[in-house]
Length: 166
Image 1 (cartoon, rainbow, N blue to C red):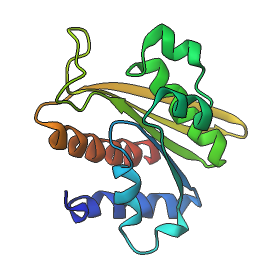
Image 2: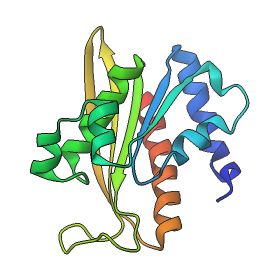
Image 3: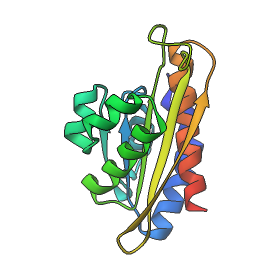
C-alpha cells in the first residue's frame, strides 16, 4: 500500500491539529499501525503526532490501553464498546487531545454471521473541556480483500479525525 495516497487527508488533519495545538494518538488492531504510518509519512508530523499503539491481541488491548478483559469477553474485541475503550485508553495513556481506535475483521478468515469479514468499529475520542472527554464510534461494513479493508479503514479513520476537529 502506498502511503502517499493518504497524504491529502493527513495534511488537512495536521493543519487542524496544529491550529489547536493538539496532539494525536492511535490505537490500532486490524490496521496494524497503518494509520500511524500514514500520519508519520509526512514531514513535520512530530509537531502533532504523539504515538501509536498496535494492540492486535486482546492482551495487548488490556495491557497497553487499559481495556478491561471483561469488556472484551462480554462484547468481543470487534465491538463498539471495545473500540470506544481503546480510543479512550489511547487518549489517557498518551495524554493527548485526540485519539482514534480501530478494531475489526480484515479477513480473509475470522468472520461470523453477526460480524462478517469487513466489519470494523472505528472510534474517535477527544478532550472537550478540561478533564472531560467524548468518544463516538461507528460500525463500518467494508468490502474487498484484506488489503482493501485495511486501506479503507485507514482512510475513513483519517476522515473521522478531521471531522472531529470541525
